[in-house]
Length: 327
Ligand code: F6P
Image 1 (tube, rainbow, N blue to C red):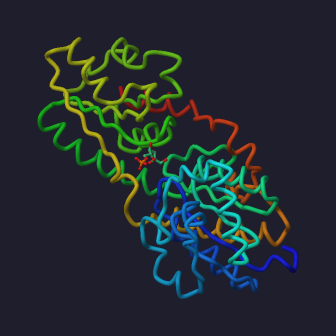
Image 2 (cartoon, protein in one colour):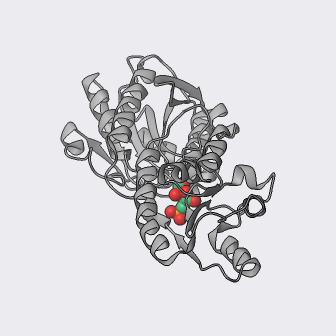
């Protein structure tokens, strides 16, 4: 990063994810280590508009690596989607002497970052922080591993009661139109199937499941469902089964926001620490408007245009794995 860029603003935006604090810590400490000053921006882009910006020292990020959520708070900010809102944001940024921003969040955060950076011609580096794991160009997003482990633990518990009562459970997990949590959660928890949006648009997965001899050899079953209009959601699927198979004792469990909380796993803390450090390295190398990613365990820099534009594909082999193991 050239001499005149000396102050870095950091924000978290959109849905929170475990590991965001570890990323805030890594960005802050790497920046200070390299001689920059750091400003913490509260509530994402909303804090830029509301001028909720404070100095960040190394002590501000002490004892946070183990904490879920984000100490910077987060928001989804409508005003920032307008040119007027972004102008106010830019003016406040300049008032604080901020020359570059590191934005931690998901798809919406990076979309906002891209527009903002292009409009005012300054560098923004994105760090993928979302439990959904749905950003193109990175194998993993911060928070995904923790959420996956949470799902696995929840399903393990539901399995106890499902088995005792010989019930069929539809368990709905988050993912905002992406099936990573549902598919990998199903494999990790030994579920019977995963109903995911990527496939729902091609075939009626429930019908396929039934035609394949669904519950032939088992008294209890667990099906993970990704939240999405494409899957219809767990309640809708349960209603369909109840109508077709009145003898089945069907229950629904929607895991909801508990999937977003909790102390980050070691994997998420390490990922966040590496990505936070890489964000500052990117600025030092005069990179701009890129998202930090990790591919095959190596740090990569993904242009915002790609990370936002393309849908990250699921690994379809995993569907076969799940099918084979659920006989
Ligand atoms: O993007 C993360 C996520 O948790 C999605 O999985 C979910 O659809 C959404 O956020 C929920 O958002 P909110 O907390 O605003 O209800």
